[in-house]
Length: 192
Image (cartoon, rainbow, N blue to C red; front, side, top):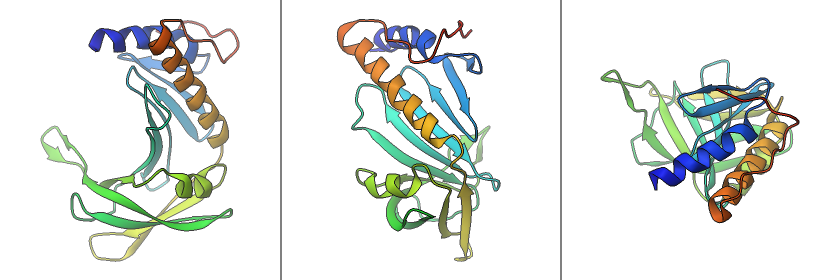
């Protein structure tokens, strides 16, 4: 499995990386205005950050488009690890409430991370319709029970999502039939 992941990463590496991309330890990241797309041998992730330090991500597992999920990291949120919580997604297109699984942030140098991470439940259609192409505000509660909000920009979200799915298609094509993925950006230079 590890050799397959390395082969997939190597074959996708050149197709994903383009002029503004940077690569560190086998993961390439390309900016799309306020969003970015990162690719490794196991996942393609489109993400953006809020001014308050939150991160909104669309995470796709290599090998299938059915395993794309929305996730959040909110540094000032609080909830019980493993619990299901309601998150409000407010945008100019749609406002909706979605269910998400709360998780503790990992230890960093032996210290617990501040805040919580959330993985949205279900197929993500409700979240996608509120998020895709819109500025979106995510609302939940903090340790005191007060509402907190993080606003995420739409600038670059559409191109980041297109790049995410094209890159995912290229990874999937390479893993299923051994072909090198097709380039979806013009004349990408090597990314090392």
